[in-house]
Figure 1: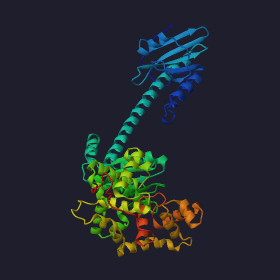
Figure 2 (figure 1 turned 120 degrees about the vertical axis):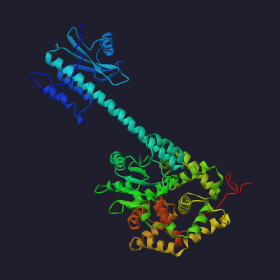
Figure 3 (figure 1 turned 180 degrees about the vertical axis):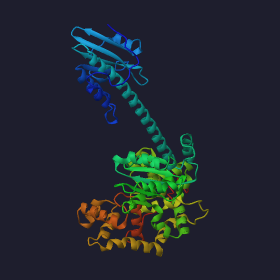
Figure 4 (figure 1 turned 60 degrees about the vertical axis):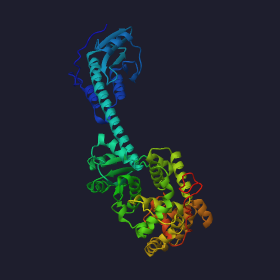
Length: 511
């Protein structure tokens, strides 16, 4: 027999002399204990029964599948009846309608036991159905909230990737619909906050709260411990710094203010500053706080050398040139895999773009001295307001200009002071570091040249990092500055910078 129950089911503690089951059931509503499968398992134990919860399509959601009358299940699922009680031989069964979140309409809670249902067991089943409805609604709300947050996170990453390749028009268009005014600025700063990977989601939420969602906060797709924050306002810097105060394993690096089109440059600066933050008591640093060699060079000579070196890139279409510059700039800072993740392209695309730049510049980016020189040129190019009309002979600008840039007294003094910090170590860290750089940052090759174990080379390089306040083993800006210091003092051979390649199809002198 099937019978209709009251539809106004409530999740209240039932009257009776045994409130224990009700308290146990209510405990499943605590935030730390909300689990549909656990509730169904509890009901099976409390009712000494086989219990199943299925949706209107017959999909088992929890419990153990038991034979059910399909017609009766269909009547309950469509709402013709709210519940049913059956007796078949030595088995007693209760079927109760459970409202499910859309797109499902309703499910059926089935309880099958050898003993008849007394009042206590019937109450347990009825109230458990109510608890299951609440939990399923809560789970769907949480899932919808998670999907919304994930979509917003994906959009923020997409905006950042557009800015990384200098497509500010598209980035503003995407941002305008969801975060009006966020990119209504010509300049911004980029910060990179670092924490333990397990804490990154919490740190990202705190960055959003600290900036009142008036900043672009992105979970870095390349480094699991990093959160990238692009902020147009000045106030956010102090709020972000407050996040690292008193927190172990949390650091912050910030860039100088850059135009939106130079977001990739600002990101590289922030990562460089983050490396310095690891050696600071306050665990925070800004790129402008450190003396960089390019600031000690003659600005006109540096500009002319940069324009001369990068001139072969000027003949490719503007959007392609922007992609090549942004990709190479990041590719010199990070691995091809991480660069691909940041830009949202494949690593083969990253390699192809960098190989094209190599071909245009007729140089070898596997050489650390070449990488340091090209990195210097790319960062200088990012700061140029306009390209001068005449920078003299291209070959002269490239072949002799770099020597002259490094020969200035201010640069040489900076280099001596920087590398001189290593002289007090009896292990001759300076010799190991010089040999390691000459070997392309390969510890095994450097070890063969020095006659030591490769692990010794790595330990020496690692020991030099806190002395120089620069991260070396991970590559990037810090390492290139140290390479420039060695070049300025003549401790390394000058890089092979050949200038334009007349045979390259993109060359301005081709044909």
